Amino acid sequence: MLMLVCATGAAALGYAFKQRLATTAEFERQVKLAKEEAARIREEVILPTEKKVPAGENFVAALQKFGLSPEEAANASAAAQRTFNLRQVRAGNMITVGRSVEGTLREIDYKIDPDRMLKIVPEDSGFTAQIKEIPSKTEIDAVAGRVDDSLFNAVEDAGESAELAMRLAQIFAYDLDFYTDPRKGDTFSMVLEKKKYANGQTAGYGRILAAEYENAGKKYQALLFHDPTGRPAYYSADGKSLQKAFLHSPLKFGAPVTSHFSKARFHPILKIYRPHMGTDYGAPVGTPVQTIGSGRVVFAGRKGGEGNMVQIAHSNGYETMYLHLSRMFVHTGEHVEIGKTIGLVGSTGLSTGPHLDFRIMEKGQYKNFEKLGLPPSDPVSKKNMPEFAALRERWLPVLKNPGVLQANVVPSGTVEAH
Image (cartoon, rainbow, N blue to C red; front, side, top):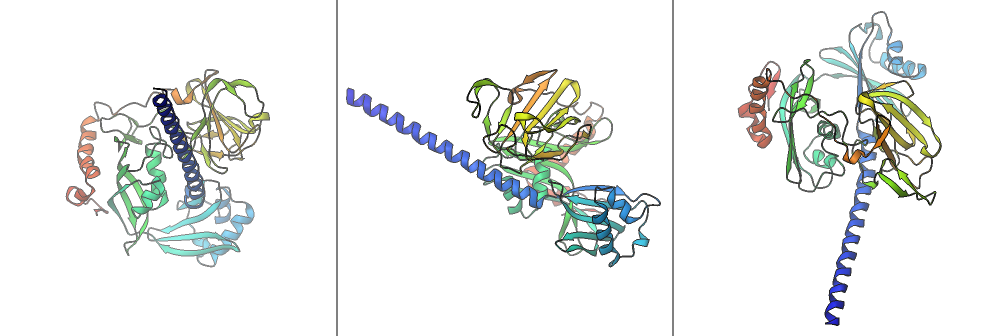
């Protein structure tokens, strides 16, 4: 009998040890993937800002309004002048400046006319410029894939760019954290507008008209419709708004939670038990941090043990705080939109290593963000439901079977089925 008890105990200990090793290995895998995703976001994702050329303003002055320094604007204009006569720049034409999530200048585009684009790109020795043909058509296309490790890799395996992975993640950001939630075997599909050059090469993406992501057997769907004011918005198949007051995560692609909200946590530096009024995300230095909701920056700077911190006031009495940042991209008094990159993960202040300490308050009281339920925006109105139902009947079969797109989509204007 004693031998049986000993054997049973040894088996239980062995099983517990194996489970602990598996958990440790999974955590290390998640941290490694988070580091890779952060590097890829910094290197590959370009965030565009568009403005029209004001009347009576030269090209140099127009570029400075995008935040370029006088020297950068002058050098970019000099490179452009060697390719295109800037005296022909017209008021009302569009300038687009693309930056990395860290704010690094990546490209400048000036739309000369409907068929030509002046593209200016920073190089190590200055700027280069060339005139490129603008895509002659936009097609409706379908993209589908399967996740083996990360959404970025899955989208690239489907033959598309990292930009599309970012945009898909943003659509479902209110319900899914696209670092911690995806599982091997998850699937996605999209119906979208794809801009193409005359040679058939993809030049960029327009609107994502419909999307589906199946996560661990649960299906999430999004249909592009419009809210009561006419602005574009995404809704689930039953007409509920996907947009909530706050995003699901303060990190664009998330990270493992290393410390939860607690009224009595042992502080690893101070060696005492005290409340931990936030959620810690174990992300590498340089991981982009986003505001989970629109609001006004009430503090951005250094603050004791919190290190570099950004604090944002939102509507309905909510405030959010982002601690230990390595860099901050906003300043006190600035208004920020939901999802804006406000800084980068760091280890400033009282911190044992790189992580984001994220906190949220409601009417002055700290809340547990992991358990905080937030109301969604208004659903599709009864008046607009017939129009929405027609849209749903058009796109849901395509999400289920992208191969039926050509049969279901009737070309309209310059948009063609593919």
